[in-house]
Image (cartoon, rainbow, N blue to C red; front, side, top):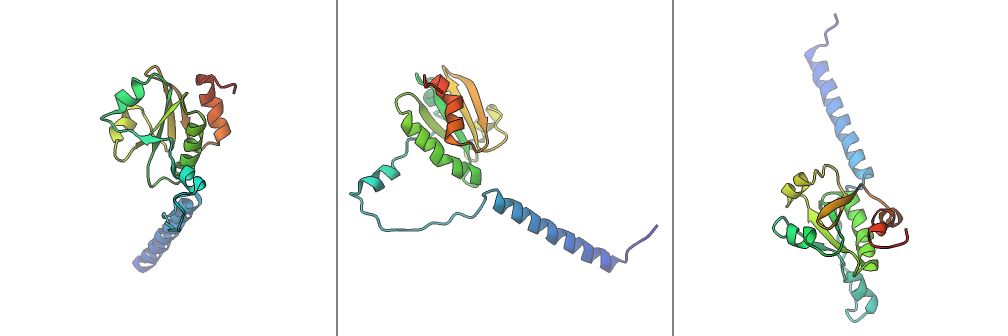
Amino acid sequence: MHFQPINQMKTSFRLATYSSMVLCAAVLLTSGCRPEMSVTTSTDSSSEASTEASVSHVSAVSSQDFDAQVLESDQPVLVDFWATWCGPCRQLAPIVDEYAGENEGKLVVKKVDVDENNELAAKYEVSALPTLLLFKDGEEVQRIVGLVPKAELDQVVGPFLGNDS
């Protein structure tokens, strides 16, 4: 049996810890989890383009109003389970917003922040982010897990809206 002197073990442990930290940082950076950066620009508020870009077709829902806004809705409801720290969630948000705008009147779109409403995430067994749940007549009818392009979103949700997908 071979034993390392304690000083060599401490050095090996430090190197292994440092290597693990570098690997974790690399994984986070490549998965889209980057610190948020904000850039302030001057825009003309009368501009049609800037006004249209700021209109969101998705609104937040919480545990308190989930039943009324989602389960009791007359229209199909797409619920986006997300978190502020989730890079893929931030990438999916404009796709979902655009899809909601294109299907206004046929589809209601809500979002649930899992950090603020973890009981909803637990109730619907959301274990990965982002997760999209489609509800129709108060029941979950479809589930999409992960970042998906708009075309795939339409393939899954479109048939419930009467779209020819």
